[in-house]
Length: 392
Figure 1 (spheres, rainbow, N blue to C red):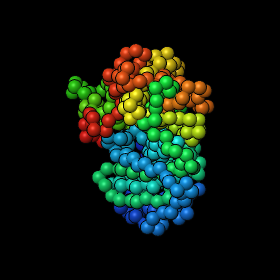
Figure 2 (cartoon, rainbow, N blue to C red):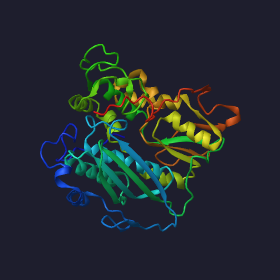
Figure 3 (tube, rainbow, N blue to C red):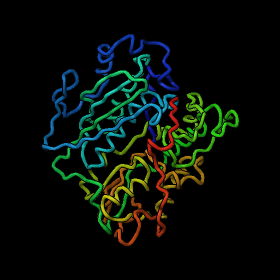
Figure 4 (cartoon, one colour):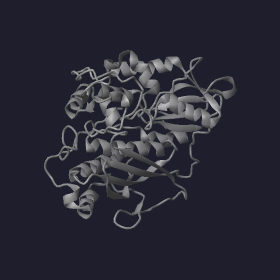
């Protein structure tokens, strides 16, 4: 599902970090920065006491709540040359909201901590706040930011903690799948991975990975589908470039926006739980890798239907022919789409879910199969794998 967000007026049209006008964090200080951020943040329906005190107070009518956290760091997790600050706010919201939805819970509140270099323009933090607001409004109305913290750091970092209400239901964990369940997904597969591949291929400048000369337009290497994350060491000495990123996004908006500012079907987490989901998680690191996690936790095996995978690949090719023969690899191992992957007993699936395969007895098969063939290459994204230490 491609992002429909446009850049707010206070965000640089290419990066969001190259804003020439406006004071920096060092010039304004924490108190004034917070005064500018607070009016932009969404309020939560469950908020009893919001930002401004030592802690927030959030209603928990169920007597329980689900909680998750995620950290995004400039370098291994995102590049300022590719993402606007608004993109970062949207992505920070969506990645955490998806984890709440994957438990079958309704997102209720976020707590956000930001650390940034002192020379960062205040407008960058305001853009992040706007992205958080817009992400919550689109994907989880009623969820808001109830508190957080600001600090200084050599690199921009965004830490989000999300809370959710189970509304009297049992949580949907990864460990409940059983043989003869059907595997299904809600949301897109392969788009975010394809967008990342395009950015590494076409939105960098400098020397190629082998040091063999300057990268030419449209030929910035060929990062393999499904390998690495925003800090993939495959780029070698090549540097992410804002101008090229804008061109790539204009040419392939659905794929690049799916990577930089994903829109996730958060609202389908509760219907999945009500529809009898036996296990669920979000596809953050790749379909095969996350299906394996579900299978291991449940003590079962997962069999992906080759025909269903081909339908997903064909839909990706129809969306943007640039993916070509890589489409199936993006679907299986691309990662970062944050689609909801769930298992259900035999029978009709909840609206918004489509079948991908079946759950098998683990004694009869490896963890993950595509048809009858074990899928050994997990692919997906690992923040500790291949990052070359660059930012950009």
